[in-house]
Length: 240
Figure 1 (cartoon, rainbow, N blue to C red):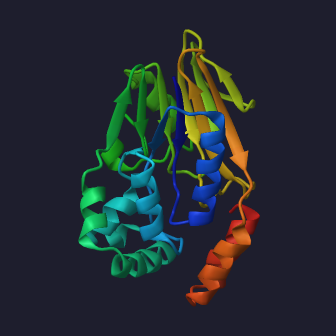
Figure 2: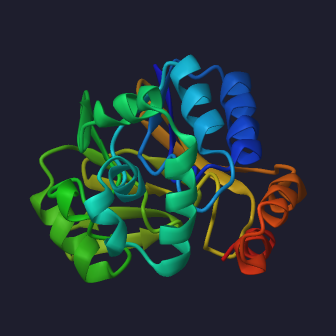
């Protein structure tokens, strides 16, 4: 079985479509989405419907939570708050009901899937600092964890001496525990503007981080047309 794992779409329809095409070409058997379908981008409704049509299994992200629970909007930064309020005016009860059905965590075989730290996903802890990665891997009940939230694609392996960041984009699953940050589909922040996602070949015990180009200029034009801050569009081209 081959699983495609993606996260942090952030209402970027062009990026999502490019990833769905790439995933289809790879012959993935299942699509798992690690939250944050909405926020920042101009196409929240279209992205929600595309993932529903694709039969994706989705977990809840903090932006998704803020969309359905207005009390959580204040927890986001100012740009995120503004775009989410815009999104709230676009979505209908159908879309909200779909997102309300998301769990914080999904388990598939020996893997766990969450937007943030899978040990306590409701706390929205970013697994960016190595000390936080260590804390997670030391308590992980599953063989491998897939997360998003940071918008930085990364691989970590828990060795006896502690977690080791892996510099490769591929991972052969062995006897250790592993953490895979799939990066972001719609808003990468690791200096590479291409949409990021992961492929897990369960039978071959192999994980690979993938990047794919998308027509980001179209997304930028939509943001400009909405009158949103120019930075919201310009950051896409810089991967920041």
